[in-house]
Image 1 (tube, rainbow, N blue to C red):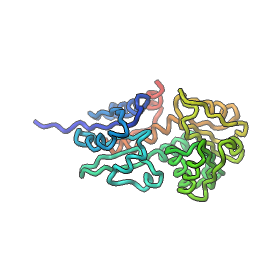
Image 2 (image 1 turned 120 degrees about the horizontal axis):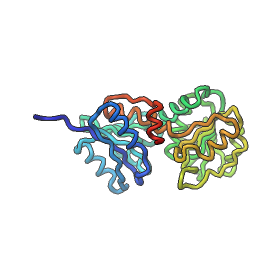
Image 3 (image 1 turned 90 degrees about the horizontal axis):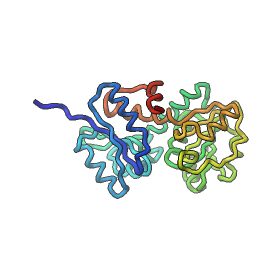
Image 4 (image 1 turned 180 degrees about the vertical axis):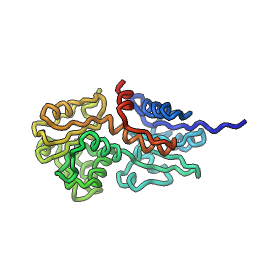
Amino acid sequence: MTEAKIPLAGVIGSPIAHSRSPRLHRHWLKQFGIAGHYIPMDVSHHNLEEVIRALPKAGFVGVNVTVPHKEAVMGIADLITDRATLIGAANTLIFRKDGKIHADNTDGYGFIENLRNGAPHWQPKSGPAVVFGAGGAARAVVASLADAGVPEIILSNRTRIRAEKLKDDFGKRVRVVDWVQAGNMIDEATLVVNSTALGMTGKPALRVPLDGLQPHMVVTDLVYAPLKTPLLQAAEAAGCTAVDGLGMLIYQAIPAFERWFGQRPKADSATRAMLLG
């Protein structure tokens, strides 16, 4: 008597122990009654391609990819979606039945969906967005904001050359400001986004003056540990709409889970409560 293979998925990064993705996907697997598993894998850059190419043979249907491998997997994939190409990084790999590795990026989708859920009154065309950071997460944020119709994206990064590179890739709607002037650009914004790890537990603080925050602004932080970062605390104190980063983690995972396991989960209160618990 033969039985179907148990589908496996996981997340690859280094380090990886902090990731909440295993808890999230295991919750959904249990919710749908799927006999699958989601496994965290700490993989070095030197072993990345070898490990990824071996996974389909072990029964994996796909993996998430996190820092520092999001850009490197682009060179391993056989097929790359347009949005992953635009962003220049992938956070989701699908191992197809024909043996090809398909790379996608759902970070931008997760960001926008979280923003729309947490600040339903926000209108993309209402004014400029300020973005702190110019890494892979910032690229996904900028791509999604541009696609949504934000008229101008004002960008600042501690290393200006990275911000200039992002501007070169995304065009005239992106304006770069020196990091020492980052606080000043808030005055122009209707949306403020922190895409850096600054403010995360164990990381340095986001040392940007925040006295320009005003009640009409929406402020969101991709950091979700702590859930209420100093930036979001300052936003709430100024009367802004504050949107935490936990929803982005949930929303970006939904299309990946659906591709791998054939069921589309919901970003409901029970899922959020499970992650916080």
